[in-house]
Image 1: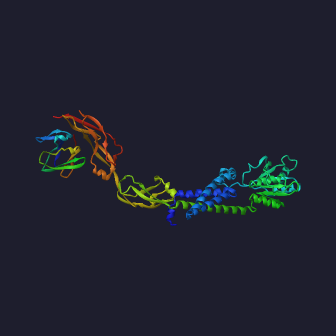
Image 2: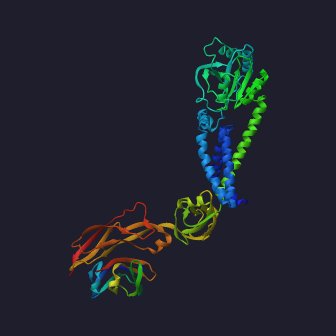
Image 3: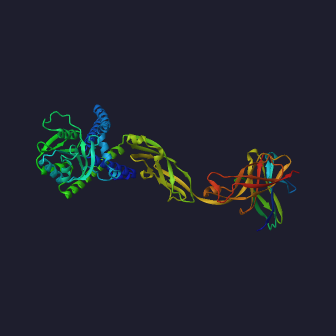
Length: 108
Length: 474
């Protein structure tokens, strides 16, 4: 492996590259849901993806860049009333290998 | 008649024809020679003529014959009740269903003839009764049971003037003298010669009311006479007496020839019974006077283990059926089935032709058309997948609280279903779990919600334990 995923979490915000209020249930009134991921041992510039699924249907795929030697990056979606329900984010490498799956829900 | 005709014959039809042929054959065997049988033949002829009249459009003739036939069938039971009763009373159950009818039993005609002429020679009066097939219990009264074997000496001794029972009639069945001193009904006829005594009047009275034969020996004139039906005639010689008895009792001179003739007659009757019943069956079951249309569900059967039906182009087939109106009106939906054998079908799209062999119909009903004649069946292999479980949270968590972690037991579930369906399924979700009641960390139970055609794998529990952690929001 050219890098290692050290941490990944769903959170309500990002402040100074640090996840704020990790949670697994987002209130639709909150505004945004964030998927934060941190990597180590990065040898060179790499590409990863955050695939956002609502009930197994792909809603968004976000391409992110990792910079050596250590990097934290995130993606987010805007919470809408129609998005309520169970979600997941698959964090994958550039070859589509799933590194981690984060599961959460959007509720009232 | 094409070869297809034979494919439309059901096992029920074969049993139906065989059973009724046998019943007809037995009826003939049991009632042969009786008046009932002759009247039955007459009724059968009337019915046949009525059917022809009906088919030719003779409305009044058909209507009248139908009424007469129905009334005659009822009258025959009333008029011939004694004869019918005697047929069934004299038979045991075995004889009724498959044995030969007992009929009149064999008598020792030579001995009887010799005895009668010995009595005549000695001018000793006597009267002997030989029953036919009819029951005589209502006609003959009194009498003393005798149960003696027929012999010349026995008969002479019974009618010997000094014997207390010499005045009555002796009833002979087979080789047995059953009763003696029996009283017979006297005839009301006025045309009999005046010199005939009570014995003659008793013999005439019995034979005019039954099929019995009575033989009288005249005490005054020493003559032997016989009474059969309404005819009373003199018997001149023992040989003539013997032949008369043999004729009445249906005894053959040559036993071997008689057996062969009887076998041939039985075979002919059996064949005729079969032809008659088969003709009636063809007339009834192959009549095509009524047409109906029915929507019948298709039964897909013999689907191999590990394969499931995804979808079919048709679930019902419209059948056009024809048959005799009585049979068509009696058809119940559960008697009709369309079966498609999926035993050789493979996953993917399969096409099947629907034709007559696929359609199971009750006897007497014919298939004249169906639509659609082809059905497409999409099959898929059944597979098992292990999928992660996710809670489907709903409602609103109280202000100031945050759900930070969840642990599930079990966290994955094995599910079974069609491959194509499971390929698209990535997660098993629980039923909706409300957030509103959660105030602190804890556990709860939730059931997994599976899509149609997906089920839990073997040994999988239907309950998920959800351990959750709640923290105060910063």
